[in-house]
Amino acid sequence: MTGAIGWAILIPLGGALLAAAAGERASRWIAALAAAATTCAAIGVAASVARHGPSRHPAGGWLAPLGIELRADGLAATMLLTIAAVAGLVAAHALADRSRAAACARSCPLWLFTWAALDALVVSGDIFNLYVTLELATLAAVGLVADGEGPDAPRAALRYLLFALPGSLLYLLGVALIYGEHGALDPATLGAHVGASAPDTAAMALMTAGLCLKAALFPLHAWPVLAYTRASPVAGALLAGLVGKAAFLVLVRLWLEVYPATFTSAAGPVLGTLAAGAILWGSLHALWQPRLRAVIAYSSVAHTGYLFMWFALGTRDALAGALFVVMSHAAASASMFLATGAIARALGHDRVEGLTGLAHRLPIPFFALALAGTSAMAMPPSSGFVGKWLLVRAAFETGHRLWAAVMLIGGLLAAAYVFRLLRRAFLPRPAGEPIAITRSSGGHAALALALVAIALGLAPGLALDLLRGGSAP
Image (cartoon, rainbow, N blue to C red):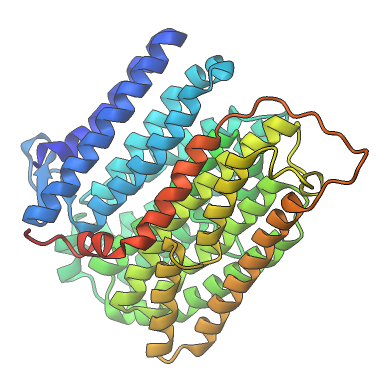
């Protein structure tokens, strides 16, 4: 099943090229077929890993260190499924909205290209190819933001690009230092030779700093908020749900396979402090935002902190918890962006103060918002609860009670901002305040994504087994 690794990249890439060259109606059909086929390829890779364990596929027939290897282990297979579930349902939402057919046809090549870049990133087998795929995903994301709503969309896209580029340069400089020192780029070779020398330490510090910037870790967190709020709901769902996790996944690969223990033990407390700042700062800002999308955007800033908390804890359970948060937040944040998009389209705005008494008028989007919110606030049986419980337990087991307290406070703050939205929506609307509601769309895809977040929490063992590399039936 090693060929399926390549198809998971080639199908969306080919679909993007064909959709860009086709007309409006044909591009939508091409995008739908490409999305379905890519999902099947991801399922095939995951099934192979679950049955037979990790596999490698030399691109072009050239093995490392001369060639580029694509590899499917438990982490790659799990992320391929996550990307397929989120991107596929977001695509279904975009393709089902016939009233925005022209905008969908214009953005189809971009989100298919983003899908291809993310799939390539999670199966890449050398640190330079990780850089290339991360940059491709970033550039496609910039295009999605620029094609957003309102006159501020190009400015938000430019800010996205200007903040992402320094992170890319720092990472690339680190790759150059490591290659100059060891003459290799594949993690297996580097893991056996990288040590605590000055060039290696400098390279790792540069790569870590660059990836933290690209992941928008506190205090470098303000730039994605404008992008998430100015992009279309489809783009916002892809950016917050998937693209925002890419830099973290690259850093996980580096810390697990390349970085020496001396470096990780020194940098872990620093990243833990930044992660705690992200959780508290993002959650507090989400509490008083006047618009729905801004609430979800700052919630995404806070959840980036949960991901990076693994670097401070360093245990296997903490890594499983962080990756579970990746999966749960990918589905939940995409659901919330699509739900808020449906609500904004029905009302003509997304102001929180204008939501009073509307839950019964827009039941599906608000139900999706409530279900996804349970994952954001880590209520059982959601997948958000599983991921954050693993992180909190790891913090107590390693004696990091301060980090555990921060994560528990973050959960309470998440409950506060989610209930703030829902309370207003379920309050009775004052008499004499009629409101015009147009036809809404996107609620069904948002609800499906929220159910994915819940389903992961109901059967966490399946995902955990796959993360560990699979086992024979």
